[in-house]
Image (cartoon, rainbow, N blue to C red; front, side, top):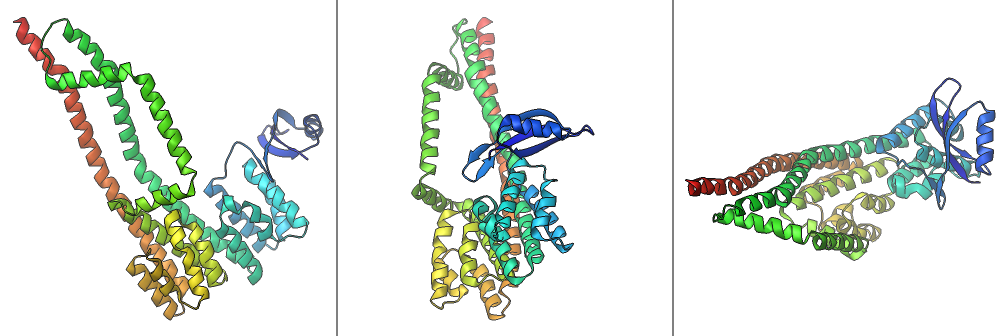
Length: 400
């Protein structure tokens, strides 16, 4: 039965959004009006396989809130199915409400919560489904989801800090490029025609900038086509696994990028692995899931052999040494955790240490980028001013 995304007004005057299943659009409208609701708009949800997508995506904070409410309901003694039914009515995000409805249907058919969420692990990550499975096996589903919530909050906070730290330099660079483009493409050509009327010899800096401006004006169409082709080629290459692995490997060879990528990978891998071990997942299964949390595909590929070596009787410490990805300090801390039978706790320490190191490196990068960008903008502004005013001085001297 198809689903329809509806905007409605309740008898109390509130505007709400609901995804309703009905045989047709007219039937959906009639059923809503019979309930005393005023229909603002109805549109059919777009179907992609099992999932019907609406305009919005699920933000990390929305999914964290969903799980916090689920934990509260389970601790209050509600069964899983009843908890989801009560929560579905209050979920504002239509995309998440749609998924919750599918999960309810699968649970009614006899599946567990982890099995019902399994088709959506590409959206919510394998870590979430593994945490649900561990909670069901141990009989402590609220505790397992609670540990996942703490994990998701830390990951979300780290990503938010990274975006916030890089936002100002990025906006500054974009603004500078736009300003330079306007000056070179629009302002300088007008000054060129103005100077030509006086027949004065222009300085070399002015002639160079005017040549660039005239070149851009004459070839703007072809330059735009070249830019579009380059973007299309890059997007096409990004779909190829070989290029993505090559690109991620290149990041590890760049001076400052290497430490950012490595610290991020160590923190994510350690935190995910620690969470799964605390939830009761065995080590071999946990390392297979944990490596998928690492964004760098080259590092993820190198960590594939860790599970194989563990199956052959090697320790986690030896397996990570052979992977040649983790720094020595992280591996030593993991060795101590293994020898002291406190691997989950030590993995949490490793994650905290490298999360802090990542934040410090990003802050240092931002502190360096800001003055460098400001100095470059100042130099560009000085060149532009000189290219415009030096000819004026020459014209004044000629007219005398």
